[in-house]
Image 1: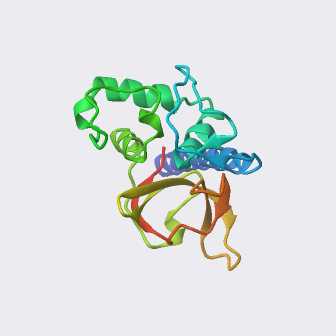
Image 2: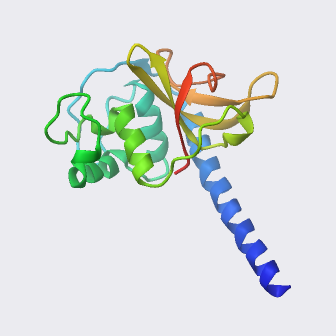
Length: 189
């Protein structure tokens, strides 16, 4: 009996740990919605590590990058180092022959590969209950366009779906887009 109680306690602690870290990422994402950001996909030469495009500019990946940075996780550095060590497994959509620490982390397919390599991939689902605060979701928008956002703890007006913090052109906002496009990735990291 003590053994079973010990296992249940461990499972509870692990579940609590996830819920706290996922909630922290969701809270960071919601904090980003308070900032005015103009959608700007321009290439910028930025410092390394901890570089960022101008704070009033950004795209969907910058939402994820900035939210993780608020938790002291630098995706610019993390993705760059992983790509440098494993360049052959990353997408070659842009014709690159080497890494570029200014932009690699700002590309959805690279973030998808990074999260996959870190064991963060989850099954795709059409059940909104499978998407928890702090989860990362990617979509295919059609015509070769992809998108990424963060699940938050706020719900749609009908209470059925979690909102997503993302930037698809209107700045960093929380919206009901979970099932608006074809989901291509679901990650918990």
